[in-house]
Length: 452
Ligand SMILES: C[S@@+](CC[C@H](N)C(=O)[O-])C[C@H]1O[C@@H](n2cnc3c(N)ncnc32)[C@H](O)[C@@H]1O
Image (cartoon, rainbow, N blue to C red; front, side, top):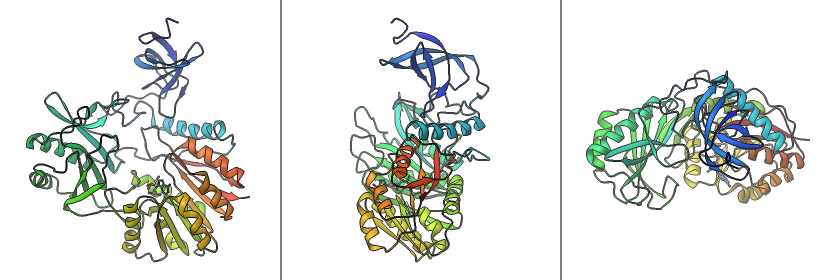
């Protein structure tokens, strides 16, 4: 068909949005996905990639604007892969996120469960505490920023609407210093050059920064000059870490990490709990909404102080430690060993003596933990995007754990797991989406499941 080929142009009505934030339109009965288009838009697109029943379009112009459309406030929005929904009003994003969860539960999980309105942010800007910024060259220029949508070309950062301003300040200082000192950025195509990524973390509680410089090579040339310059320019910089990643890979961090200057950990706090976060540990990226999320978990579990609570996929022990004062015992499980060490250190840091943490995969460690503990009264599961192994859910059900709080960052795997848990005798209360990532297509949910 001549209208179904790369280069063909079409006018489309956008009627939906994929979970990646692409506008959904149709040409006859075939689907076209277009970035930067939202429901209610009528747009002119050019087909850029064709498969049998679907195609990807490039937005050429907006013929008629959706009432939910806004002018992106970030100049990088049309290209940058960091945000997908800069062109959508914030209340419409919140509504869409709720709908996305509802749709996933119905279509993928075959479930009818109440989904509450998404809890958004009062000020949905500059909320991120972590940026992973690739470096490269464009011509003679050193560039550093975010990957373009669907490519590894780098959008050279000049500002960012969602990062904490200190992250942007340090990022710009790193880029200038790297250029001035002649430190060669990594060349992904040739697998040559030195500096691959700058990973920057900021503590919202203390306004302190950690910089992780990821190199292909064992050496970071002119490291001392770089540190002297950055610490002179940015007094909030508390730690400079060197991570070595010699592999040909998209994974950012390598195995070897050495502190070059300053602190080994970044100290932060969520509510009443203090956390020391090491360079390789998972820590939620939106600390303001993390408090909302952890308060919700606490509220849903309604602990009396007599319960033994499992915290599966616990990262640096953050949720379990947040709840520890209300439980008899907290038992965390996490696969990343440095995160488990962080969790133990974090317990000490807060004077918490009723929490223990185990290194290993939840599916392997859980059966033993259940055998060892007479009764588990509640479990929190907060898995990565791929969700839980069936064995984890089966072990929880077999042990008769009466209450589960499932924290999910992926509605599709959440729907699958909820459907499995329903089959295992659990019933879900209302699902609460929380917007941890404004202007992006990501959604987080919390729900309490009780044994029927
Ligand atoms: C979404 S994070 C949650 C972290 C923590 N609950 C928090 O709020 O900061 C998921 C965590 O699961 C860990 N993880 C991934 N697969 C795992 C597995 N099979 N068993 C245990 N932990 C796992 C990851 O390393 C990561 O720290």
